[in-house]
Structure formats: C-alpha cells, structure tokens
Image (tube, helix red, strand yellow):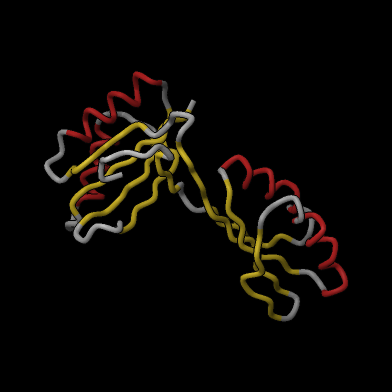
Length: 163
C-alpha cells in the first residue's frame, strides 16, 4: 500500500535534505518524490509517496509537522486527491512504423515533444499506474529510453489551508 503526503514548507536551503533525512532516519520507504515552488512566494511544495498503511502515513505527517520549516502537511491519500506523473519516452523507428506507435498511444493522452530523423520523443501524463500501463503497451515499438517523474498531488476539496 502507498500513501501520498503533501508538504508545504519555507523555501530555504537544506529543507529537502532535512525532509529526506527524516524519512531515512525514521525508516520510511520513499517510493516517489517531487519538489517545486508554489503560488506563494517563499514556499515550496513537496509530494512524497511512501510505502505503508494509515498508521505509517499518520506517523510521517506527525514527524514532518515537527520540522521548523513546515507550514502545512497532510496525508493526501483520500479519494479526494488528484495525483499525476509525467513520462517522456524516446523511440527509434522509421517513419513508416510511426502509425503503429500512434495507434497504440491513442489510449493514452500524449503529445509529440520532439521528432528528429528516426527519433520521436512522446510526452504523456497520468497516474503512476496509467503510465506503467502505457509503457508496457509501447515497449515493443522501438522504445529506446523512458523516464517517469515523481508525483504531483493536490487535495481536490475546497479548503482554507495553504494547500
């Protein structure tokens, strides 16, 4: 089981290092992480996917909340969370085989990020599971390389918090 934890913290040097150090010291297995700035100046958002149940997620939230730089932290694993990852996939295939690739990709939202000679790079977004399924669908179609981002997640409910 995986749990998604959202953290808004002060945007200062070393905050990410402190969060990852805390996760390591407390024995949390981090399965995915994303970090970036927010709409609020001086604030960063971290999205962590950790292995564990409700108890483990609650423990992670309590530990992160104790950090001085933490502004807000929440378990976003409820059904009200919108979570997305991005994946880039590089293919090497001649132009006459591209129709087969694009037919296979019709089941997944995607854009062509780059085309150059026999190389095509596609970009797609979705849940981690959706992207894994996409990768399996096109693996045999000249896939050379793929990279998947960590998760981005927001609570879909209207709230008055900084999330």
